[in-house]
Amino acid sequence: MDRKKIKRAVGFFLMIGLLVFNVWLWNDNTQLGTFLFVGWVLGYILTRSRIGFATIYVEFFNTGDGTRFYYLLLMFVFGALGTTVIHSIAAADGAVLQFQASGSQTAIPGTSAVSPVDLSLIIGSLLFGSGMVINKGGGSETLRKTGQGNGRYMLTFLFLLIGTLPGQVAKTAFDQSSLSQYSIRMYLPDQAGYTGALLLTAALAGAVFLLTRSYEKKRKQEDTYETKGKQEKEKHPIKTFSEARQGGMYHTLFQANWPALLGVVSVSAVLFVSLIFTGETLKVTKPLLKAAVALFSQFGVSFDHPAFSQTLKTLQNGIWNDTESVRNAGVLGGALLYSLTSNSFDLSWNMKWREAPWYMISGLLMGFGAMLAGGGNIGALYSGIVNLSLSGWAVLFFGAMGSIATMTAFNGRVSTIHKANE
Image (tube, rainbow, N blue to C red):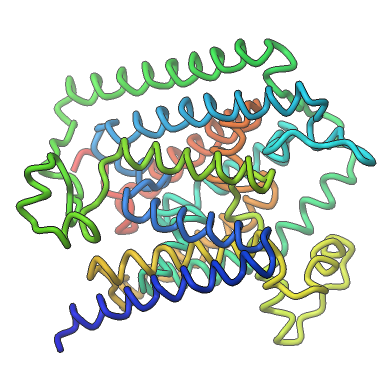
């Protein structure tokens, strides 16, 4: 039996095992079962549709082609459309924003993503944006690439976990300082109503779209715009149904990368399922703090600092009883599932060893930055925007500034960032 057949066989055993275990977990603990389902489906979708925030940023500024960036903006609007309905129904039933809820009050699903825009968020977003372009992957992409056997991302993942620890200490210190009072926490429906908030979100996405188009035009005029032939190609792209059929049934069902639009719709559907059945929005990087504390506690590291009191309380019941950690394990499992069934799993270091320190630093920057910003691309940026919070747009802006500054400074000094105009 050749390696491809072995990978497929292992992939199908994993698929059956995941489904059986998920059903058992549902029956034993519905909440944990739902979070696991959301996690592995999200990991599978993100991997197969190649939706990666950092990859999109780097590709856009390396080539000038904003095609994939446009789908990201569409994902914001499509997600906001669904959450507007979910939020408005909950509010009509008396639910309030999560940070306002007390006692028996019900929180509007997903409003944990409504964060204050303050100096902590700004610095955290800048650091996270810098780290993710060096790594060419944020928290979710690092987790997914780890599931695909990529050793470089495993190295980054380890240092991302390490980075969350001082990041949590710094965030706690900031929240207790006088600087924390200089902030604005804005839930857009409070200012413009639900319909107005949706229209404002669409308008902001439209403004970013116009800026992106303008940059594309500038690159074309300067003759630095790269054609699709020079860009990173998908391993198994689906362009038309006839082309998919030519690759065979297995190729269509299990190997072919999904069209971007299908990825947008699928991620949004997972978001809606999470909001409706768990009341929680999607998060990846920030919950990794619990994994870091659980891991390093096994090596004798003490977490007596008050910054870790809530995390230690959560971990008293075991990390596998923590819903967010189970969801993250699912994301890794979903990525592994697709990579095996598509024959793309490849256990290799996949990096130049002289660049290893940069990937370590990128992990530290992302872990530290995510704690300050309240999350990464999924939890702070995407979830913030689709849950109608001003903070999501702030993370997008300052994260982009950190990314642009880092790509300009590195300019080909690391293999993940190409030299400008080459």
